[in-house]
Length: 408
Image (cartoon, rainbow, N blue to C red; front, side, top):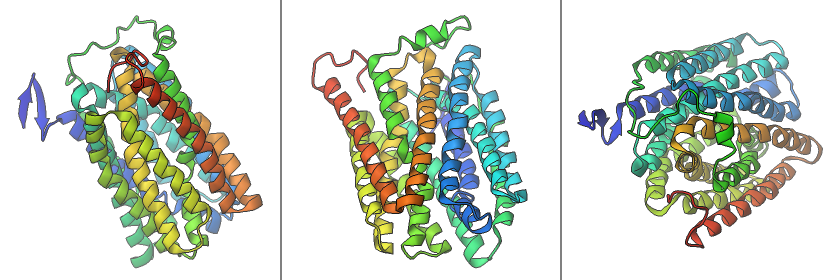
């Protein structure tokens, strides 16, 4: 451990960045023990239709989305991040524990909403603290590291779920109970965060006119957030892909393994993608990512065997690695430094609100026409967002002044 400008660094990252990475690692290990079995639990045990699977994803994300903006704005005003993280991670931990006691699918939906509310409370303040704890020159790498840790935890969680289902043959409810253990450890790690470890950039004053300043965000940031709302169709496709793999011949354990492949690819490419975006810019990396995602939708729409399902999960993981962390780094680049929590909150809110109609539409289309139609719908919607991103990139790099925003 060394010191740079009074801050503690480990391997080039501040201690806060390391801690936030491990908190996300443990939380995602907990969450992903549940994710691949929850749609199976709903459809096999609770006998819920596919509409409910899609509704579960969309309602949970959209309910929490407003809180993501509110908590981000609030954390800017009070200049504190950790209390929001403690409250959010704690609520999510308790919700996961209570999944084990669900008796009807309505219980699962309610608890999933509560779990996502916890994420809504913590998401923007956590990302803002991450941005506060690194320099602009290493921001992409820091967000890439966070996504790598986040997704490595997810891979570990899925691997644990695979072992518990296939080798120990534990029932779904027991797995829900066990998932609360890493979540509890993550909550305890929050108390080791040091909010005085920040870069020298100014923070918000308590009397800043926050909502008026949000209206003055750069045009590039506003358009980018709108594009992310359109592309939020991708955030509700995980459950659909898992069910698609089963319809293509996978059993429950194989479906979990495919989801594990997604997480391994996602984790493996996240840091290289973030580091590359620090050198060549954010847009080229993001565009390659969403082009890969579009290809995933095409393959999934034609999926008829396990090899095609594997290709879809591989592309899905690669696309997420190139987009998720880099997107947040770009939002942080474009936002005024004293309104990072607000900008990240609005970014998360746009994705969450748009996820609801996307999820409902995807579930209804699946029930009426089948999975191929849902993924074709996803390809059509994502193409609109992709063209909007291409327009942003051309405007930014195709003229001397671009949007007048900082170079990234």
